[in-house]
Length: 455
Image (cartoon, rainbow, N blue to C red; front, side, top):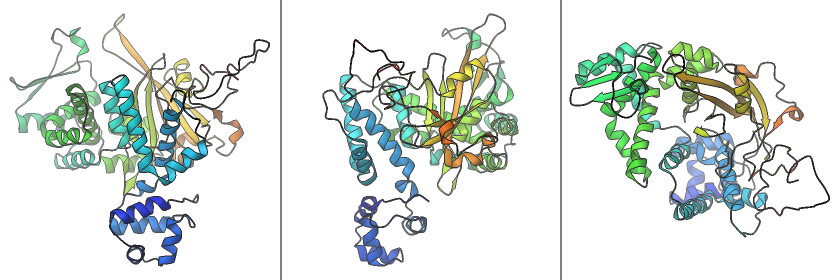
């Protein structure tokens, strides 16, 4: 294990509990001198001490996670690089702040967000995305409720549609039908789910396959069976307006639906058994590639964690329509993603899973896999949509994935050097750079031309 020094965080935890060093040392069965050395960063925080903290105080070890620290570093670098006429802050100083004073770091980030909100109010979907990001894309309360109900309703693994329809009919008196309708919002066949509360009628598009139909019925059940919990979570989020609240409710209902038809324990066990083979895992539960990837990015229950994944969905123009992270990976919010990332190469090889070993500027390395997904609702000439879905994890977890087969995980010189986004990426000699890095002085020489722009 890499040596981890978290003295300030440990001291803060002790002060929050109102304990002296001696009292905390006794509770953890440590000597007072050893605890003092931990708090002074003279000794690294070890796994046994973390486990004792969890057992005695119920502290989530994520509080002392290096991944959480890396998230803060990435966010701080972006915010501090975007300050006009601001003093340059060295990476070493940012690391020190994130490691030893995370509460201060988060406060600074909050101030920066509020300042940006004053200059231009964040869009509601951005607020909701940040809500899930702050939870590492794991909503424990929703997950636990959905898993319990899945067992109580005796839903069949990979074929939950009949059980869900029975629940809707028997418990709520709702009839489920397949068909198109016109509601004035566009072509009838575009709408996948429509619920008429007055007639107690749930209409599903005939173009949905069995897994998609199950997901839509599970989403409707979320609003019927989990509404109090969803509303409480939305209230806690302190979102700015009604539009953001409604989007958050839909996001949590979709989360519930995924957790209901892909119950946490069963899904994690199967994922581990299949070494996270997405296609085999999707067939086992009767869902598609994107749904499987999204569910894999949520498996962060403290006592039963899966591989922490970063999940993303992009279009050909580089727009990110979904981005969720259970890991420390982070892309910039202020100027595009990296063109060297394999999610863009996937469009050139549709339907094929591509793998990539990628190195970030901070020295961390990741295993990425990407594949296109396409959906349509009509025949020839009807509109369709195509995205690239990416799923990545830190290199230290790569051997747990079937996709690491045949890859040399130790040959760092062969890793693709990608960045968080051109405006915050320090790779000055990248030939694909679109913008100069923020906060740096650009040297303009009329008498020279380099292969790499903004060198």
